[in-house]
Amino acid sequence: QVQLVESGGGSVQAGGSLRLSCTHYGYSYSPYCMDWFRQAPGKEREGVAVIDAGGLELYADSVKGRFTISQDNAKNTLYLQMNSLQSEDTAMYYCAAGWGTGGYCYMMSGQYNYWGQGTQVTVSL
Image (cartoon, rainbow, N blue to C red; front, side, top):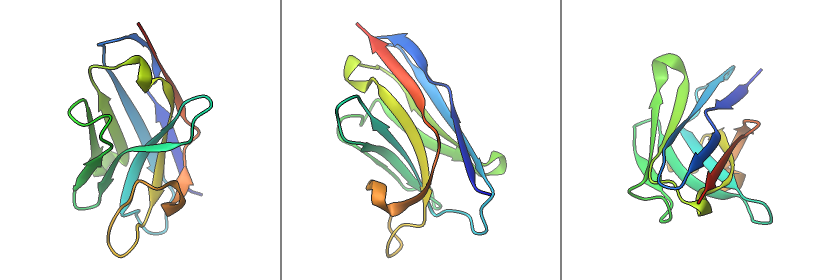
């Protein structure tokens, strides 16, 4: 049974940092794409960062230069290092696993087959 378990969320002041982790396992075939999404109250879920099996990273414009996605395949763990946090980053953060389309990974929620339960990040001024 596939499971994705996020951790590392919490409350932090603006300008602070957090590192999210997502431990994932149970696949018949390892996912090609691992993504972090977030959803704030009253807003649609949006892609934050994605990494493919080759290590290629993509970021949403709103987090470029502040967030870094990485993965430790030996530990089956995906990370999101978040620096210079802003109040606009407040949201529930989800990790997701999928196999992409045509060898490419997209930050589109419909491309992902498995999701974690989410971890809350709250940034206060």
